[in-house]
View 1 (cartoon, rainbow, N blue to C red):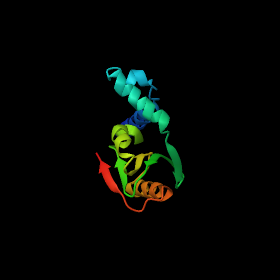
View 2 (cartoon, rainbow, N blue to C red):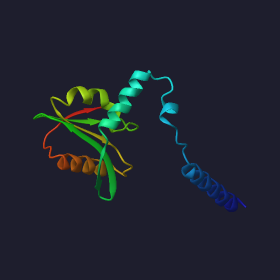
View 3 (cartoon, helix red, strand yellow):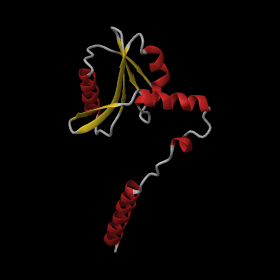
View 4 (spheres, rainbow, N blue to C red):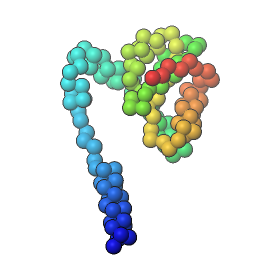
Length: 137
């Protein structure tokens, strides 16, 4: 009986984990995500996204989204926190793009830091950038 209980408990836990993992996350509209943000700020981000759509690059079978813009001899690589995206730094990038080359990355789902490193290095190579200053959260 004790052995059956363990198997049933294990099966229940596996099913619970599978159910949570497979439960679809709702897609919310921009207005639902940012209901209390000042309209001017929302318009600024939407304008930035329209003027600077992300580029994509496939590295080791994983698609990376990034932005490369600006001019200048020096380059800045913007790296966000784990829940951000390439455009989280839009206000800083708008100001600095006239003086620096800018690269900002959205992290895809990768299994380890090595894959993260390979993707970022491939993006910098694609943008023909050999040296960067890094800004991160």
